Image (cartoon, rainbow, N blue to C red; front, side, top):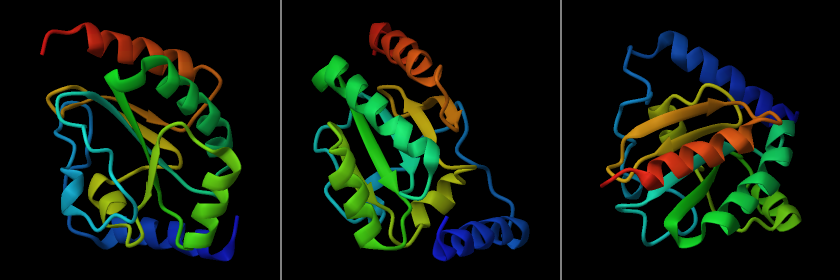
Length: 165
């Protein structure tokens, strides 16, 4: 882990200790509207009314290296019915670009350069994924990534796609 990554994590922990209490984005909460943030990159144009998976990641995160191929497979499997969006918390644009160039994801990626979205969501760890239903409500949260996560995500996405809007 780079020294900048360590500094970011320490700052995030300290911020949580001294910041005024506010609710984290948890199951049942509305996910924040992404256009209100100064996110670097292009958000997918058609997110409204779709099942969306927002995955927070970083280039220095070892489990993120395993998650990218899995998210690419899920995006290919579900196609236009689902939007998968990877949100990088990398401080350095070059680290973000190198990671994306290496893994060539089949899903959209952006960078939360100022960490405002990450802070507002109160992302607990890298990676963390939020599975959001068609109405914009968080239905599932995955803190971390392990070998069973892709199957869990697949089942949850199918469940949400089968629900009536």
